[in-house]
Image (cartoon, rainbow, N blue to C red):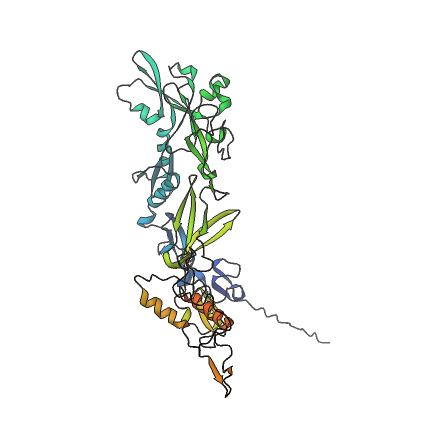
Length: 486
């Protein structure tokens, strides 16, 4: 008997790997199966991303923030609003790092980033390109640590609350001793400076600070820490996070001076109605009160003059701003060329004056194009009396500067001009009856015309925002059946 062998062949399909400019899960420049590549406009190629030009890695520089990102694809950089350079290691002048010294802080960043940080915190900067590493940069900031600089003056031991660097360079006081982290009122230093009930505001800082008898600042004002109540509070420096009611605004607090500008308060002189327990300074409330409502510091909102909803002549929009406890008014453009728009997130309002895009409404012949809010601010009017057809008119009727732009206003208002003929017939007996177009001249027809005119701008019959009637106010008292003179 012969032996028969059966051989079974197995064929496996190896799926081609593609370089996806963007995958369906949102990642960029990844090697993946074709099905995982995002659709157009994103590209894909049946090869490795390392060999594709559109996935070439480079340096992405953010000119606003001053940050640099290595090994970034060009498309990714463009999507984030960055500037792309074909140097993956970011070895470009804009990304050169240096030591950014701000007060007693230091960061190893670009010069643009240094300026950005300084603007955020309101500090002066010293950008040093001679310091080439982060460790040396951070170490250089230690000379700005604060403490008590004790020295002899006029046969007594006095003190200046300052930095270590300034203490070491005090002219004529080579024997000055610096005590890091100490206040000049510390008893163990044996100086003539002691605690007081006085407070002060310090430029560049939000908080209310105690003062010692030598005029130096001490810790943040806390009425429970006055003089002998807490000697430690008058000995060592307490940080903001260690002070009273940290993380709160403390606006108008009589007992705590731990103000926070970003939470709506800052150190100011106290007024007659709101007094602290000690001193003459308080965390002033930066909120604003306007027409019976309270707004947060930094909030903006819309306010309109009378008649803005009806687009009356002279009406306009305004952007209101709450800043440092005071409300200021920023008018939008005249003649309703801008309108104020407002949004709200977590009860915080933001407003802006936005251009009224009415100029090409009359050129639109399709309702969909007319009411495309991304391109224009228009409204579709059906069966208008001027032509009996549909027309596209401004959603927010603009105003006209009749003093300098009367020709343009005339040409716009002429779009709503039409002639309506009313015909009457007399019979042999002298009786009259109306014939022809029975809609012409009726109150409904007049109202339709008025809507058309008002939609185009300051045309037709209007009363201005002050309630003064216009020159052409002849239709206001029009009756549906007017008397016809023979």
